[in-house]
Length: 97
Length: 428
Image 1 (cartoon, one colour):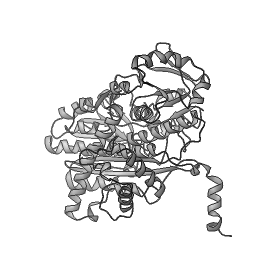
Image 2 (spheres, helix red, strand yellow):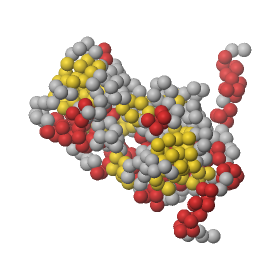
Image 3 (cartoon, rainbow over the protein chains, first blue to last red):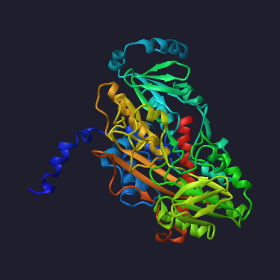
Image 4 (cartoon, rainbow over the protein chains, first blue to last red):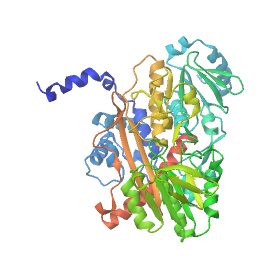
C-alpha cells in the first residue's frame, strides 16, 4: 500500500474539522472587503449583484479560476476556493437580492 | 412584536445580570471586544449583522481611529489625516455598546475585564484585537524621545503621520530621506515599500534634487519585483534600497546628529530619518498572558482562539498567523471567522470550517497600483496558503504595454475602492 492509497484515510483521521462546512457570511466577508457590505462595488470595483443568477455567479468564478477571463485579482482569489464554497457564495448573494 | 429602542436599553442591565447558562441555551451571550481597529471594529459590525442575539461591547480608549492604510498617501500629499480618521457613532447606532476607556486588567478565570475607572465588565467570550507596540531600545538609542526627531509613523494613535509629513515638507531640496526597515515579522509587510514609493512620488515633484536611502534588516520583501520595477521606471536616481547583505541592518541611531548606524558601522545621515523599529503584540495582550517568548500571540489556526488562554480570541497584527501577513484586511478576516466560532461555541455547536483571506494593494505612483492576494486554511500547527491561489500582480515584462497600463490603473482604482469599502463596513 503506497502513500497515495492511504492518503484519503490519513486525511479523514487527522481532519475532523474539515468535515465542517464554511459559514457563507464569513466567506462573503472576504468579498465585502472590496465589493462592499451589500456587494455594491465602488471605484470601478464591479457590483457582485450583477451576477444575476446562481449559475451565472458560479460560471464567472469558475472562469476566473481557470484563467479564462481577464482579471486583476479575481483569478488569484478564485483559485483559493472550492466548488462547494463557490456554491455557498452564489446562494448567499442570490438570497441577498 | 416590536420592541422599542428604549425598552431594549432598559433590558440591558437585566440581561447582564442573567446567569451564563441562560445565554448558552439561547445561543446568545456577552461578547466583549478590546480594540477598535480593523480587527475589533470588523468583529463588532459582523457580529451585529450576522448574530443579532449576541450582546456586543467594544472597548476602545480613543474616540477616533486613524487607519495605518493610506497613511503613506498623506506623505505624498494625496490625502489628509482627516480623510483617514473615523468615529464609532455608526457602530453604536447599530447596537454595539461602545466604551471609550482603557483596559487595565483582563481576568480570564473570572471572565471579566477591568476598566481604568475601576468598573468590571463581565463577558462570556472575549475578543482581543490590541494591535502592536514598538520595541523601544531594540535599535540602540531609539526610544520614545528619539522618535520625536526620527519619527516612526507606524502607530497612528502613538504618533500621527503628520509629524513625518511635516518634516518631509520642511526638508530642503537636495536633502536625503533615510528609512530604517525592520526584519520580519512586523505590521504591514508591504507598508515600508509603499512608503518609499509615496515619498519618492513627492520628492520627484517637490524636491527633485533629493534622494531616499532605505536601509533594510532583511534581504527580501513583499511584492519586491513589482516595487523595484516601479522604482526603476518611475523614480530613477531617487530610490536606493539596501538589504541586510549590503549592510542594510540599522543597529543604532544618533538622533543628535540625525545619523543611523549599520551593522558594519557605517553612519548614514538624513535630513529626515524615518525609523520603523521592531515590534511586538500590544502590552494588554502580553499582560493577559496571550503572548509567547516571541512577543506575539499564538492562536489555534482553526478558530483564532488563543493557544494560551481559554475563552479569549485574538485577532490581527498581535497574532502569530504566518504565512498570513499582519494587515488590516487580514484582521477583518480573522474577526469574522472568530465571531462565527464564538457564536457556535455559545450555541454548543462545532465551529465552521475556516478559510482566511487577504488582499493588500499598494500605491507606487500616480495611477499605478499593485497587489498581493492570499487565501489560507488552517493546518495542524499554523495557517497554510491554499496551493495554486494568491500571489502578486504580474510583472511588467509579462504584459503588453496597453494591458500593463490598464492593470496598474485598475489596481490603483481598486485600492481606493477597497479602502472605501472596508472603512465603510467598519465605521459607516
